[in-house]
Image 1 (cartoon, rainbow, N blue to C red):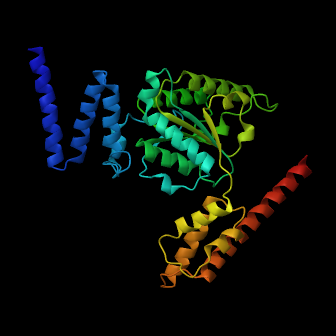
Image 2: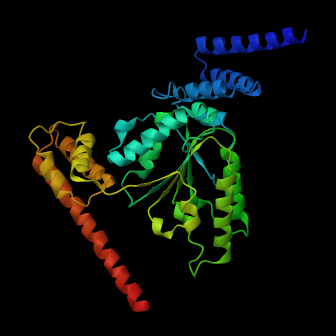
Length: 354
């Protein structure tokens, strides 16, 4: 009788799944599919449940998510919030990106491809008592692709990106910041993600610095403990523009450390080609302009290309000219002079105060 009841319940679940699909009822389909996945998980069919979840949320890991209209958020547990402000402590994001979306050094690309392969073949490694790489530290100047690379990893692995801006975790209530951290890690444990801790230096600061007070030191201790005790199968990524501020003990928690440098000449050329794909530019010598952009970041080059395309289209033209690209670069250089002068004035004022 018990077996018959189980079979009937499963049969009804399958009917709901097929009925909702045939009627194009997206939310009902998701609800039935999620219920089916939970059944398999309760039967300890962990690998099958994980594969079904990946397929449900992101196709085969390369196609568009079925939930690309944004409804997927409601199928995850409610996100934790700061008790003082009510603001969410995490954001769930989904990306349909491949390696082609980012320009990386050969060294970084090789490390990341190896990390993806290890995580895809997790069960093979576990069978031999080994674990895949699960903790990466991205460091380097802003605008050089750290966040975009995390998004690409989420797309390639077919996992949602759990974005955490650590500057928003701080609370004015005593002890609440550490509680927020604990809430975040408890949430991470509930399923598999690519987890991005942005502005990592906001909390993982050097405890030996003279002007750091006791609360910051306790937070670093809490963070280290939470990282060490985590049993999640998620891929953790920490990103910082100020790696020199990190506590010494934090570095040892990462399987790989990747430095994102400002792009080389070849990378600048590749970035120009990528960001100008939506427009014709047959008479433009991109290599010449790439040489002029020494010191520019990937974000700078994207801004330049966007400005150049806008100006071309607003002139009712569909072909980019050298003059238009030259003017966009000149605007970028003027912008950088303003920023540099502002930084120099601030440094001078700081020295005068001392």
